[in-house]
Length: 109
Length: 109
DNA sequence: CTCGTAGTACGACACCTATCGTAGTACGAT
DNA sequence: ATCGTACTACGATAGGTGTCGTACTACGAG
Image 1 (cartoon, each protein chain N blue to C red):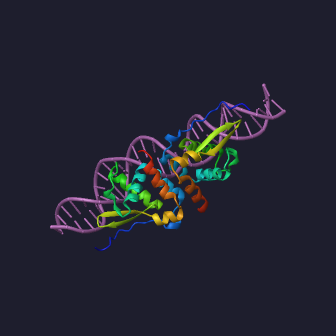
Image 2 (spheres, helix red, strand yellow):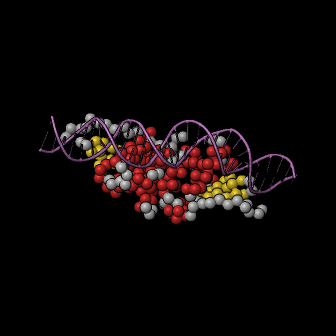
Image 3 (cartoon, rainbow over the protein chains, first blue to last red):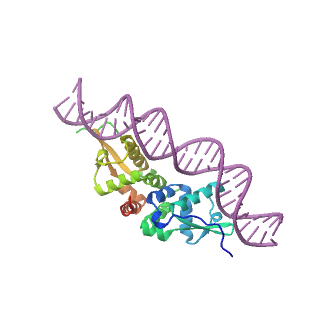
């Protein structure tokens, strides 16, 4: 399988800002995405995550997470695979991602 | 000193939402306030915290933090005292507040 | 009572954000 | 080449947010 020609821009680790990460996660839809990715512990296609919004809104939310540096995304054919930038986020903000993920588990919808 | 007649509404612990807390903290001005309150470890008057915005904008930011359940506020004469709702937040979202405060310390302005 | 201080409601401005539908692009299978 | 699938740019809508200045309220000191 040849690599897709489509590339996606991600902020480098040193460009990831705490405010941007918190902003990206301050939305229930994006929290749901992050929780799903945390539970999967592998790369997940966009279409594997069922969101209660339209596909174009879903695309919007994935982009916000990517531009904040919360997730990595790459194309595989027509699909786009997503994964949390765990290593980067844990290095930059130790304990933050784990506590947020744990908090989403504890909190009622 | 008699108590002020002015009371301020705060969300009860069970009404504090993770999304609201993250939203309140996703702003550099409010992060600065929270960091100051964390370092002070006591009730702090609004005017003790120097913010690089107008007084009316400062009032706006304190209100966002209170309505999200991040801080407690009460009047003392003309002044208003602020403190983090540490106990509530640590109980609801263990580790979250500490990791955010630590992250603001590590992050360059 | 007046005065100084802390803080604020209000309205305005400029910008941001979540939502959606539509028409479109890129890809792999055939 | 066509076709089905995943995904998206764009524009539109509706609402939210950070900023400020102004005129105001509440309070305590004197």
